[in-house]
Image 1 (cartoon, rainbow, N blue to C red):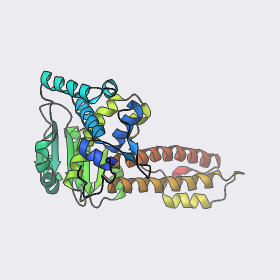
Image 2 (cartoon, rainbow, N blue to C red):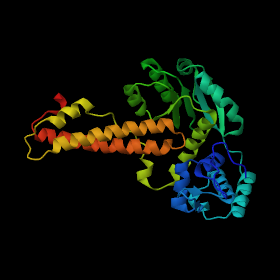
Image 3 (spheres, rainbow, N blue to C red):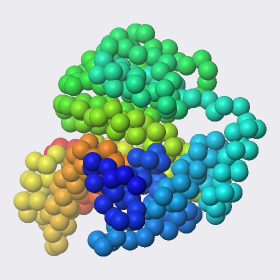
Length: 327
């Protein structure tokens, strides 16, 4: 076995999860879910408690991923050994037409340059490319071959007009996933794009990471449709923007309530902490492509908790004779 420059294979008899995701195309979240729900492999534990995967584990995971891509349900094949999986894959490849590739639309010269060399060995076909969001909004048309395309856009600094072009593209193409690579994006534009389920990634991003994220999003859709756990299926729904600003929460925490208890103060402090953790999760989501799905889950879950606490604070304020709309 050959050690990678990133020191992912730093165990004498196996690979850490980062190397496994690179070699199989699975996300770390999907891999852990398959282990937990379907017992697909049983990795050893290293000295620090981290997972250590063997070549046999990687071979099995690669076969499982290819079969799931071909339409198999992971629950139906998870218990098969490698020879059985190889036989099943051979039968699937011999008995079925070639799997339809996914239409990919790319806006932004940097993104096009990154992805073009990666596409010949991927499941994607470049259906539309444009130098800018404005150019893409005027030129891109829906894929006539059917299926749900994916959209990638890269723009270092976005303004209201750029965001309007991107939303127009989403309305036109109806992509299954939209990825936006950016350097600078104001909070109010982040919140607007969140309502259109745009995944934000910090630019610059290596081409290999971008390809891995695209493949993970595509594969994750198959895993999501297979699972019956409704909590996971709704985990990435973005919460609406905050109802109370940090300054408003600070003033509410300092007010003297007519209630005997200090519920307004405690709720305001709790909401301030939830807002901070939402921002922190967003920053982590942007910084770490490998862990982006987990941090997106944390951000969305925290946002839903924030909304519930905002509703509680509104009720307490009204009970205390304070009009929340006047704050």
